[in-house]
Amino acid sequence: KYLFKFLKTKKIFFIGQPLAMIAAAKELEIVCVEFQHGYLDRFHHGYSYGSYSKKYKPQLPLPEKIMLYGDFFKDELKHTNFWIDEQLYTIGKKTLQKYRESHLIKKSNNKNKRILITTQGFDTKNLIKFYDNFFSVINKEYNVTIKLHPQYDKYHQDWKKLVKNYENVNLSNEIDSIKLINECDIHMTIWSTTHIEAIGLGKTSIVMPLKGYKNMQNLI
Image 1 (tube, helix red, strand yellow):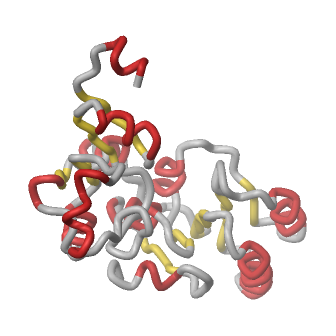
Image 2: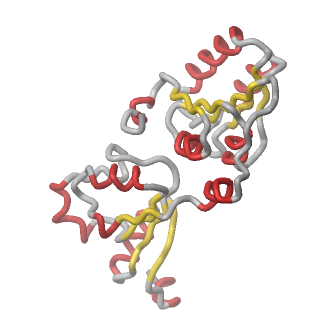
């Protein structure tokens, strides 16, 4: 609060949910604006306040406004009966729009189809087991790239061991997941914003039937 007072802050913009910061800002009547980061829906623990919570809204460390990737997410939050239309704004995603507006979306002309796998860092052992079986039955006409979650995936060595067994499978160090999605033909993950990004770029996106997949049911 001392910093906000010193800077004479009127409005703050952020991603994620820095609850302590939001609470301090609201005590000083500073407007809080959140930009969507990651997948969210009506069941997300950070947003799934029901109508019974409305009377406590002024005291909760929540933003006054949320900037969203698309109308799908806006509709999901409105389904909670907690968030109202005046708080939710669809602004799109600039990095995705860069490819869409510049006509940079790549179509495969290669004989080999390119599969991109993105991870979330959970249910990893079952995921690796699944992909080990999957890689053993697909032929070498498919080139597979695996993009690990930069923060939550802690099993890098297990993934490296898996990749060593297959000539057509590699781990990517590319930071920009949208760039990788743009270059693939098929995208695979459990539940992630990358599904939305793949659909937005006209790619086939497959929901893996493992822990967390039910979070994608409303999208499907």
